Amino acid sequence: MSTNVPPPAPASDWERHTHQDKELVKGLGLTSATMLVMGSMIGSGIFIVSAEISREVNSPALLIGAWLITGFLTIIGALTYGELAAMMPRAGGQYVYLRESLGPLWGFLYGWTLFLVIQTGTIAAVGVAFGKFLGIFFPSISSSHWLPGFWQAPEWHIGPMVLGNMKVGLNTQNLVAIAVVVILSVINIFGVKTGALIQNIFTSAKVAALLGLVIFGILLGRNAQALAANFGANFWKGAGLGTLHEVGAGVLVSTLTVLAIAQVGSLFSADAWNNVTFTAGEVKNPSRNLPLSLVLGTGVVIALFIACNFIYLSALPLAGSPTGSTLVERGIQYAREDRVATAVMTQMFGSIGGKLMAVAIMISAFGCCNGLILSGARVYYAMAKDGLFFRSVARLHPSYTTPAISLMVQMVWTCVLCISGSYGQLLDYIIFAVLVFYVLTILGLFVLRRTHAEAERPYKAIGYPILPAIYIVMALFIDVVLLRYKPQYTWPGLFIVLLGIPVYFIWRPRATTSG
Image 1: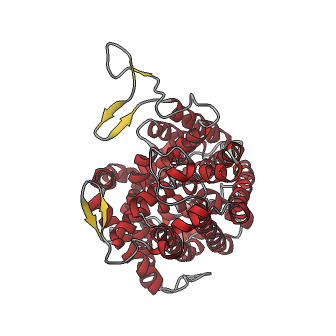
Image 2 (image 1 turned 45 degrees about the horizontal axis):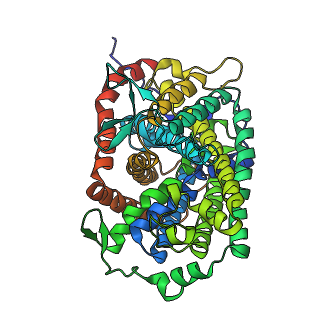
């Protein structure tokens, strides 16, 4: 007598992770993994976004407060992700955690959004910032120097195509960004060790640049006018919980709300700390090195970021005028092109200081792009292995054992995003979606503690369940505020996430077949 016994379901990642990614080269030790965390976090944001934050909060204390909140959230996130990384050291990182805790749909939605907005958008934004600072040396490289376009046919038009509040087109600034993305994507084909070597060199250089900014700021950067304007009783000006702050045209909000809005800049600057988990299949002794690299990397970078903002406040007044003729008159709020760090170094050392800072920032942005390009491609590779992305993306380069096709696909879409908006617009699109998936991933930890209580946990999240719960509440509050007060950017991001649902059900038959 025969019985119809259904075939066994494909083994979950949980059951097979001990046989993880054996085709990938284990080329990342603790130093390289930590450098990847730090290098992905330190891009261009810390040198720029304090200008926008200061215009939003209009208070020295709240400027520092915005960075302290970001640091608190980032370190809690790193402590929590350390447990997941040690349990499931697979290529794809956060994609894998969501798939195993909440189901394959959620993993796919993360990978889908990562590809369309989060990772590629961050790479594009940092690349555009590289072009912004290169423009200090070559004035022809500018966001206002548009190249001819064909969108106003039959005559070619020099200028952007305006879509809603976005200016889409090719200018010399984003052309430089495209060149950076293409060069680094090709370099990363030549082995993970090659990418890691570049990452280590550039991360060392930009950490040294941040340290130099802090040390020189302490020794030489203090400006009497800035100290009087920003510290003492003035430090707390406008920081009371009952103070109302204007957002947009006459809209008044509370201090907590304006701090949530200000998180767009600071969270973007500190983001991508999770990228090391994408490369878990290439990390040596991942159960130890992944949690350790997350904690070490985020801790050092957050300390540097907060110190840099104190240096900004000691060198330039927070408040300023967009028409000011001197650095002090323009202040932090209206530093030219939002280049706060460059303005501070110029204040200390004259024009040569500004140029040195610009070089340091370009090194930082270049290294950050490299880390993001290296790690992001591993997620699409992992999705393709599950049948949830183009099958060819799962193929490795025969000589260098790198996800070469994944790198090229990521490169093409990133180049499209480079011409789709300004630095600030890309930044706004990214953060909302990033927080959505951080919340879901940390919720996944609660699920796994219940559904896989007996699983081996080489490292357990410090402060569980209180700290992860605090993260979820704070991140949800920020997302709700952004939906309310920056709807032109956040709703499109939410739409992109939801659009992934029907796409998943189109891809799912392939996933079943490949399983």
